Image (cartoon, rainbow, N blue to C red):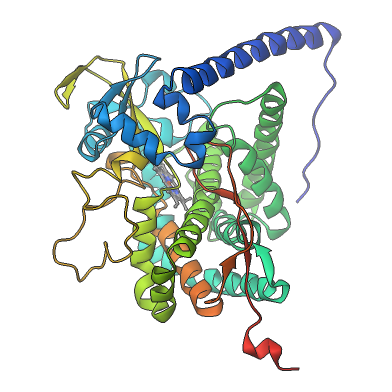
Length: 438
Ligand code: HEM
């Protein structure tokens, strides 16, 4: 597959106009950053603190402060932040809430759309993500995980994120999309740049990187579409190009693929990493998993999704006036659904701050309500079965092959508010007896 470079130099007037745009953009950005720092550090505004270091390190005490102010707390921007399980679940399910209608613009994936377009596009992608379809990938997941762990075991010390948690979902999602192995690293790099912008643009350099990544990813996908039109295979992209013009318009194709790529790996990597972090901080629960990896891995994954979810928040707009938690929400007002807070609501979970891997034990009679880590309602995560399967395989094999793993250094957190997980997680594993044999 050939990927031509197509960037042309800009004329001088266009260079100048871009420069003045960049200056205006940068000053707005730095003013906003200063406002957040002032509101967070000086006025102790909880929503601002969530965007600063204290919130990134540990948002849960901040959620508690918000919860103490009520289930729906007005923000400085005139929105409402919802901390209750009941409130978040209602907002995510109730069809009087949705995406901003103005968001239905070119470049928007179905994640940002309302019915009927959302329904049409989601239905098209759905067959690739059913539990039955996902089961077809289990063997590949296991092979990949074993290969990565074998490599890491030889090193002894490794970064659990880059050495294990990140490569596994990348292999799976690029496979599902039908991206050739030789291009998988490029797709992953551009996808990472795009998800890095979920929290907003951090600098002019960041804005430039994002624009370039978007353009490069678009080119890669467009070439892949051409390839699959000529040589269809059993993958999502082949399925999409076959439906082009009928169920999906040409301009909807790239956004759909971007969504699947980005949602497919930048979330699951954090689920696996958050799981290992939680288990290493609770050694008795790690030992329990090591004693029965096949039996316990699925319920451990559920508790990690509740206790430390990789996606900490989303939001909806009231499409009409709605009464919720004894408050009238105006049409057009935004409600930020704080998933990380809802999952620790004491009205929904007993001892919500306790990491308890038996909480979702299917044999427990008074079962806990489903967590909101994958949201709820019509936008409920399409890839939930895939994410659960990947994390289950990862934990099962890690517990089987590296029961004596331990942390070997401080972690660094991602510089993001919506997505939560470590950027690096240094670990060490003693050599297994087999390796000691000459
Ligand atoms: C642990 C991993 C994952 C987490 C925590 C997660 C979380 C979420 C959440 C919270 C939403 C709803 C967002 C909203 O309503 O605003 C969502 C939607 C979505 N997720 Fe995931 N996700 C994960 C993995 C995946 C995977 C592996 C895929 C597969 C490619 C995927 C594909 C999607 C898609 C396509 C949507 C949009 C659904 C719609 O709008 O109808 N996700 N995910």
